[in-house]
Amino acid sequence: MPPFETTEAIAIIESELGNSLYSLYRDFQERPIAAASLGQVHKANLQTGEEVVVKIQRPGLKVLFDLDVKAVKNVIRFCQKYFAWAKKYDLDAIYYDFFTILYQEIDYVNEGKNADRFRENFKGYPEIIVPRVYWTHTTEKVITLEYLPGIKINDRVRIEACNLNPKRINQIGVCCYLKQLLLDGFFQADPHPGNLAVSLDGEVIFYDFGMMAEVKSLTKDQMIKAFFAVLRKDVDQVLNTLITIGLIEPMPDMMPVRRLVNFLLENFTDKPVDFYNFDEIKEELYVLFEQQPFRLPSQMTFILKSLTTLDGIARELEPDYSLVSCSQPFVKSLTVAQGRSRIVGELAKQTRDFIKYKLQQPSKSEILIRQLETRIEDGEIQFRVRSIENDRLLKRINLALKTLIFTCITCFTFLSGSVLLTGGYIEGAIVVFALSALGLILMFKSGLQLSVREKLDKMAEK
Image 1 (cartoon, rainbow, N blue to C red):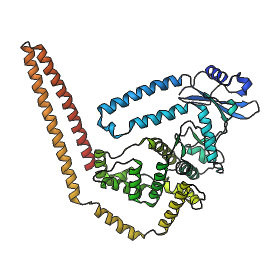
Image 2: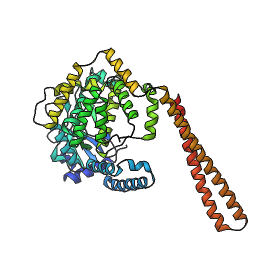
Image 3: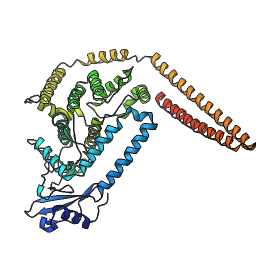
Image 4: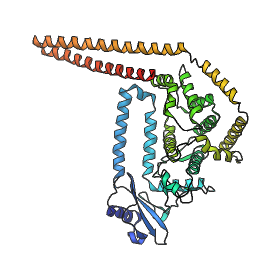
């Protein structure tokens, strides 16, 4: 995003802080060191000599946000009215949470308070650095922060050139977010590389605190259970917590979802993702694509956004990244956790249970036997595969018949309209041509569905 004019930035600073620029700052770099959609950042020095950065809000943002709010609301209403899939998701709650946080993001006083709260949460954690807020130089549209230069967190080449260990940085980042989500219930919801950096001593620096979110108590409890269930590879517990949180809607046949969760736990919790492995569960993916049991509760929107962004950064830093390996320092710290907090107590209990689980791990031969038993129980036999293939064929035949019927209706009404038009019955011809146009739309829609179905079936059969 290109920066806006420096003269505008200076005018905003002087208007907001009620003084001339050089009465407020001893030095001020007119060229911004960073610019984004919401504002831009200039380097400066206070009159007392401290190096700072001054973030100034882009002019006219609130007016644009107000327009966006109305436009998105209209789109949601349209989708809810005309698309069945929209009713499966709580779009109104997602809309409300998104714009609540977005409006908070353009209030720099709120951002400063978030930074102070975040710093307090990580007091005693020397590997996490949060810039100091200079409140005398901060308003809703201007915020002045301590200058903390660093290396972009996903710049692996520079990190290694500075003799820093990417694996250790991943550990710090993962453990930091586990603490935010599972202990504090207050997390940075936008951890992209522009908001995170690494100091020359290997500490992780957080820069932006505009987009912060809270984790509700019930969600936090379930996330704790889900996290340790993932470490234990406990499929049933993971499924139960995902259903309780609202990410999965129960179905009459939960076997495809269960097999997908089991596959993910067995293949990707302690080793990197290999997308070729998904070929093993192509039947289940096909069924899930049809049934669509996954949901997106509003309280999980920003949590999932943060985790997926963080996962991408971790894989850039370390191709062999493993969540289990990176979370070990956090898990170990919980074994000696003390405190009256119910959350701390629950975490400590789950940690002790996990240690017991690791000590009672079965031998490799026992694991192989259990896996064989599971595959038999899951019904992975030839009859099941043939049944799915027959089901696919019947659905294609049904779509083909619908397409043929709509084609016949379109042709018949078009010919009828032509006859009426030739006979001078113009009004009747218009009505019949309208019916023909409707039949044409339905014919194309059915034909498109048939084409997509055939492509999906071919992919599943490969």
